[in-house]
Amino acid sequence: MDGLQTETPRPDAVQIAGFLEALDSQPFGGKPKGRFRISRKFLRQFAGRRRLPAELVGAVADEMFERGYVMIDMESYFVVIPQRYFGSYRRVTMAVMAEVLPVDVADPGDDPDLGD
Image 1 (cartoon, rainbow, N blue to C red):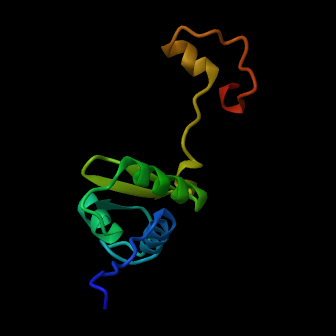
Image 2: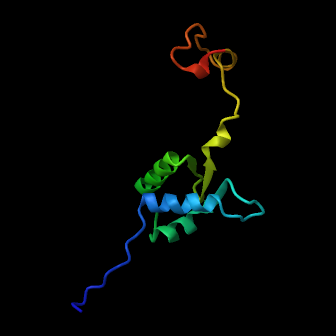
């Protein structure tokens, strides 16, 4: 041996996203599957890092989005929620916005969520 130690490669954003996606289908916390939160400490341990750089967190969040999830950084933990949960949320219309903000409701533009 030449005295050099080979380290185990750290998981990249794609591998970390795969781990998080696998957690979604695991039964824990009294639920068979679905949304969950994971501590920064646990995610850091899985990533094999002492700290989680913002670039890595962003890359994991982007990969999770591509897989159909939203990952939200809540400072001390992360929330992972399937995107499908958001489909039934109320949509804000221009009429509702006009009640709250001084906006011109005459031109919703190309945004289908802004029409009445």
